[in-house]
Image (cartoon, rainbow, N blue to C red; front, side):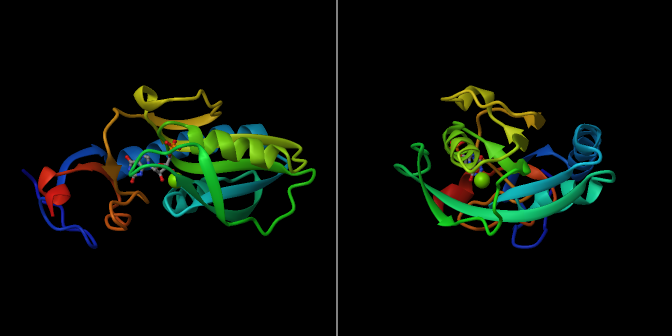
Length: 189
Ligand code: XMP
Ligand code: MG
């Protein structure tokens, strides 16, 4: 097995690289081109969901060439047992921006059950937005509990826990430039 030693990741912690840095970057180019085409001449507010979306937000926003953007952040926590989300969401950090009359794009790292995002969409829609769409880097179709309308999607991936490119396991591995699965020994520690 190849070893990957980046940031906090120890060699052999990553079992399998699902998406390389190059694949992610190429996909973000496509997503940015689509967003640029749709919002050209408009002012777009990008809303990132902390913390997982920081890498997607940083890279996607810098690839937008024709859209005037500003950025805001939200932190939410989903009540649930263990790693399963319940759809009951608590706001840990709310937006600074007023959404009235704004074109808004939610920027997400990953859609799993879709429960968090569907809650977020209805919450933001109730704030008087002019338009609201979603861009997500990853989606696990097999895990979907609710259908969420995602206009810009990066990759559909298998229903496995993944880390890297913003995604963590116990706050580790966020800084990996690629997305991968963890070796079983990591969970055993
Ligand atoms: P739901 O189920 O509401 O949850 O769509 C979405 C949130 O769950 C987290 N999540 C993951 N985090 N690797 C992670 O590091 C994963 O494979 C994974 N799947 C879901 C993430 O915070 C996401 O926003
Ligand atoms: Mg997230």
